[in-house]
Image (cartoon, rainbow, N blue to C red; front, side, top):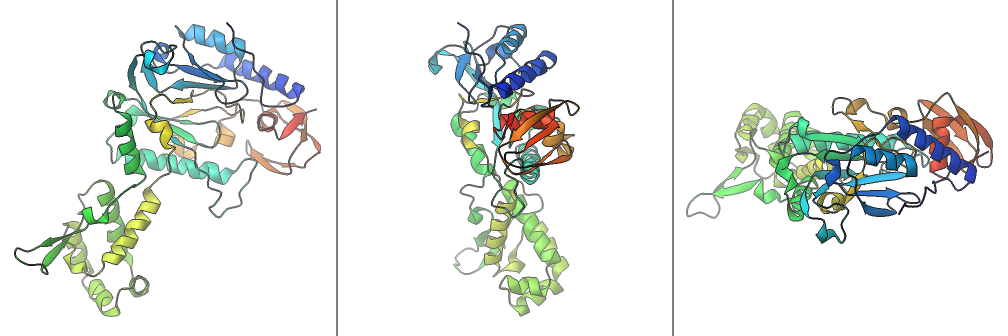
Length: 389
């Protein structure tokens, strides 16, 4: 039985027809397939992100023909591999393992910036920086994955998906994945396990203060770097601002080289009395390094994730696969566009504001009829912020 044809995001019939035609044209010239396609479950959306799932294909050709015929707005596939991916219920599929996937889709509206509710360049840049941090600071540096085991794709909307394709993680349980998330988000991080007192025998008062050394790893290394930088660069006003007495601050500054050398070895004894400062630095380090990740995407083994290089029905943007080398310079509203800047259409705007796309700015006014490039028109139609005239 054939599933229903697409009812595209635009409410007006002319807009639906245009979007459907352009999506079909895109898939006629550009198709992407996940690895081990025949072991994946697929889900498709025509009026929302997933209208139905438990679909499977026997070949890339069958998949491509289906997409050309039905033209879905959204395409997702399972991070998991199955013996029988189309079977229902889930326990009949025959679970074989699952890739590890992280989804960054955070709102940055609370951060001070001129937020653009139509399409916000600041928010897109911020989530990209978080994506880079997740890859570099956690997946590579702390967890030890190689860059060859990772790939990133822009979600096509507000975030990024980071995939770990490694046999080492495919059998990782949901609980194991939760532990990785707890580490990344610094949940239950205990300073007492990083900075500790080593008491001398038969004494409750004599101790040596031990902390992370320059050879530390993980969160301990992150705290070491923050503390080392503070001691190295702080002047008297900085120490006073942290509640350190003038006498102690002067002593630290006078013996800075010695203090830093001892810290490098893991001996923080010359910094006694500064535990509250380290507590504050740890909180700052956590705030700087920890990331907000959509936890369900990572630990839910039955979750479906956006198919890379497919179109996102809420924007018309490509959920583009981006190399780690190109990621720092990637700009979605410039580099994830599927449609022509040279073709144009007339639209009636439903919003007032500025749309920044393809390195151009377009001023929109509610109720005003405007001619815009096709890439901007598709975005506005998919966002239901305009109708085609």
